[in-house]
Amino acid sequence: MSLLEDRYRHVLRLLPASYRAGREEEMVSAFLEGSADLSDEDAPRPRWSEIASVAALSVRVRLGGTGAAPRFLAWGDAVRLVAVLGLGFSATLGCVWFGAFLDRYGLFGPPSAGQADLGPGGSAGRLWDIAQGFANLLWLAAFAALVRGRLRAAKALVPLALAATCAGVLGQVATDRDAALSGLVLQGVLLAVPVLALAAGFHRDAPRTRHPAWVAALPAATGVLLYGLLTLLGVWSAGPVADPRAWSWVWPWLDEPGLACLALLAAGVACLRRRERTFALPMALAILTVPVALARILRLDPRGADPATQTVAAVNAGQIIALVLCGVTLAVLAVRAMPARAPLAEEGPR
Image (cartoon, rainbow, N blue to C red):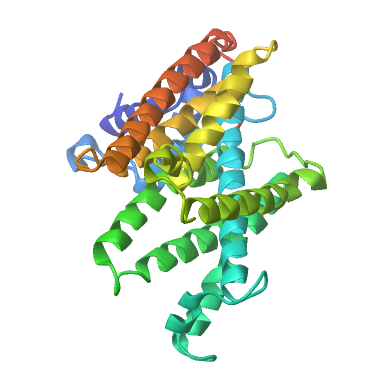
């Protein structure tokens, strides 16, 4: 065996053993035919493009699509569900922020006092704020494209939505640099997993599914209800008779990590109550508990001196514990429902 062949075989270890059993010799021969006639003294190595192609194939095989081994198909379904649920949550929040944008310009009542700080009509600050307001709908458009089966449009819209979100957070650097950087890290933690799941799970071998139109509109309807609820809670908590000690139990559930935590815990309880045991849903929820718990940790500040701040920190700590317990329970449930391992020569995508 030549040195180059040995190195090709080492690269192919990225692939599952069941896939290599049927195709390793064929792939090694193809790689050697496409390489130059080099001796071991030249210390030949596989090209980076070949390594990248094998790595991409490994992802496609392990996150299998139509015709894949049951276990690989189950993992693929779980990762694709992570993308759908994560983008659905971002689309819902995008509708909430769009509602706040419309309210700021007086659609639901008198314009807010903060509008004057943006400058006169036509100014750069005002135009930037309007662009950011409508950019919130990019998440809704990306989610709608995904669930309606338009994967190319979804994969094109998600980077735009991600860039717009990061740009909106970085726009606060001039006024509060620490808050802007903290918000950027928070958004990165919350959005990284669904975005990566979209890129990895919806590959060319993934099954093409087209959900009904009402699924695409679900985040918009949920966002409207959530915006109304948050508005009412904001008015009540700012009332003259509002007790900060009582509201400190509620406030930790109203920011982005808190809303994500609430949604995940509710979905986890519903999943545990289901009689039908599947792998994809509990594993997808378990995966999503990781970024949400990390985002909640970023907002955890146990150094508060007043009782209200200490209560907020205690609720945040309770949310983290609940997320960890929920994630572990769902992961155990998913492992128990995992399909059997594929035979050694199981077919997969080429």
